[in-house]
Image (cartoon, rainbow, N blue to C red; front, side):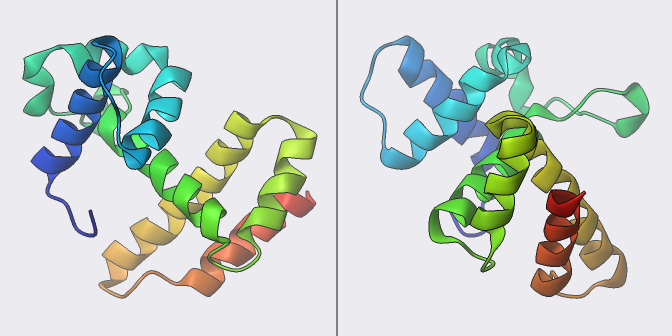
Length: 141
């Protein structure tokens, strides 16, 4: 899933949750996603209703888009598994030592959100150097 559409992302998380609830076999990627789905029970209802495929989650309504949030968790988990950008795993461990794994992932997510927003605003590729530097700064606070 290098560049999935919005519908493909939503279908992936909905299907992962459905398969888990039906005790069906999950792929390794689905297992990784399920860990984060379980960590976010507030999203379970979204994953169980067909209208979630077309639901909008505007910032103005103050509700986090569950699919975006879970996707960011999944992206960060993958980055940690391969330590890319280099040093993310060590910074994550420093963050975990101060709080817990979930909060540490959210701290990294804030940094990821910042560099993605900047990349989209400027129409440039994501700046990995800035991303890891933001994470390191958080870990050193």
